Image (cartoon, rainbow over all chains, first blue to last red; front, side, top):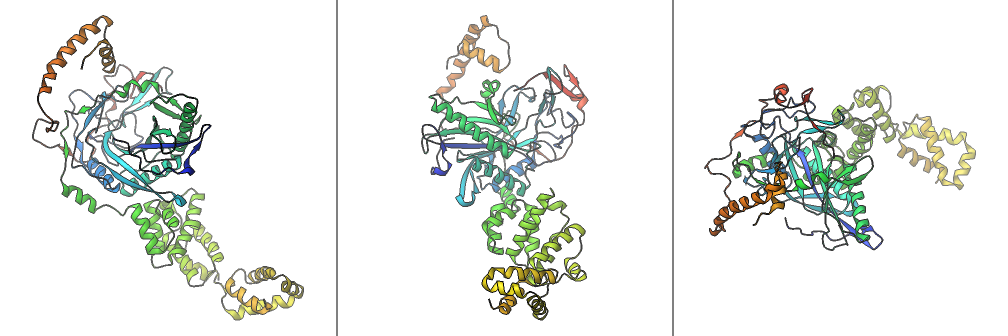
Length: 493
Length: 95
């Protein structure tokens, strides 16, 4: 892989050092567990959390004479992911053995793809808010086996090995060194995760380890030659990724400014201390002695296979974002909040269809998502349906209720359920837009408060007090626009 | 390429083969003879030939995504020198 600098140095991202400014250069390898029933090369289950070594076949345990047979679903999922990353699909790819010794790798090698991966170069776009859109290159995506799990806290001087994860299919998605800040790295991981979830090729669950990242970090003087990189292994949360990058960049700058040099090495992030430390035992293992796996023939498929998968691809986040902006006239920012997951986007569309898109976006994002987050719920277990929220919005649009009453109505529907229109009818929550009725209330307030009427003539902002009185008299049901208009006329403001 | 005692020690370690220090020189000599023999192939011009990954004209066999195996943890661990609750036990490996 030849390193090409595709970015223009941005002073906003520079890090201040004692000797001048520094710039981070970051590349990520994301390991995403493929969503499938069985493993990449064996028929044992991929289910998380089963009893130790129960998801293990003789193939996974590397018993002598056992041979791998590839799972066609994992091939489909890798190609679909490649298509989602706008990447080149390689109709012929080759499996290699990556040799190293570790107790959680019973074969003594990992079946991976080295020279000829299933997916080649692609592109991911990041929405960096006011900094605009950033393009991150994808170098490749390849299929490989996951390793087992070591547990160290069960015994004073022994480690326990569970091979349930051994042989589960992983997609390793390698970015180009195009990332220039921890925030971009975080956004990149989030974007990849969203794309994988839209495609249904990986559940993206970082807590369970279905998605983890190896982060390559180096520093350089802005726009200069690439520096020597260190690789931080197995980072399993976006927050840790940001912390690890910030720590590592600062560590490297301190070494360089003291006249030292960076050793290319593998490091571990310790989430307790917030520091990275050298992982010396893996040093020697870097000599992986890759060679084509003699047990597996080249993986080949034709263009029709790829075209059929492309045809059935769901709408992807970027396309959905652009469609939302043009179809519902909402802001780019609102659209990016709404598309964060497919279920969120679907919910919004069900609310917005045939209604005012801006009003729908406002209610879905501020009231609905806000409330879900507060109660630690999500769309799938929400007490309020898209139809109910749509009903509330209809009542606002028709002028039957004010925005303020709508919030009360939202609370009622959230807590008790029911049809919004029925609730408004039964509990007489309709706002009073009848000017005659409002005028009558205003006349009454003006006649009983002559001293306030004098004051408001000198201080027009006191009109708020009158509005408050009318709202109180009408139990919040008077149409605020009508109240304001009539008050101004009557008070001569 | 020429192999010396240091290289023999390194590849021995990578392959987890215990080598005696007094055998390193001799093994280096043997490996050099083997490499020399194979190096004769360099005389053939293969610049236009794609590396061969398979000797048979067949494509990779695939299988359906179905769970057909597993749930015999006792058998999986039955050869292990040490095991407990169907876990393999190995000398502690901590990073």
